[in-house]
Amino acid sequence: MLDDLVGIEEAVKRTGLSDIYLRKLCRTNKIRARKFGMSWVIDPRSLDDYMKGERKRGRPPIDK
Image (cartoon, rainbow, N blue to C red; front, side):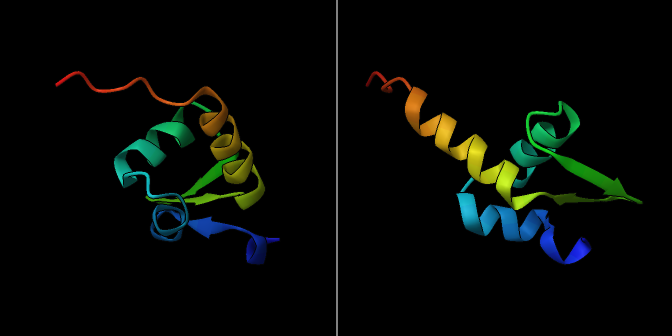
C-alpha cells in the first residue's frame, strides 16, 4: 500500500504546485493523504483527480 503513495517532493514535481499549497490540500482533505510524523504521503490518484478538476475550473487571468 505504501508503495502507491508519493511524498510532498514528488507531488511538487508532478503538479508544479508549491509544497506549502500541497500541505494545505492535505490538511483540508482536498486530496487523500496521511501524515506520518512530520511527513505527508499522498494518494497519487487523488492528486491526479484534483489536478483534473483545477484544469476544468481554470484560474482567473492576472490584471496587469
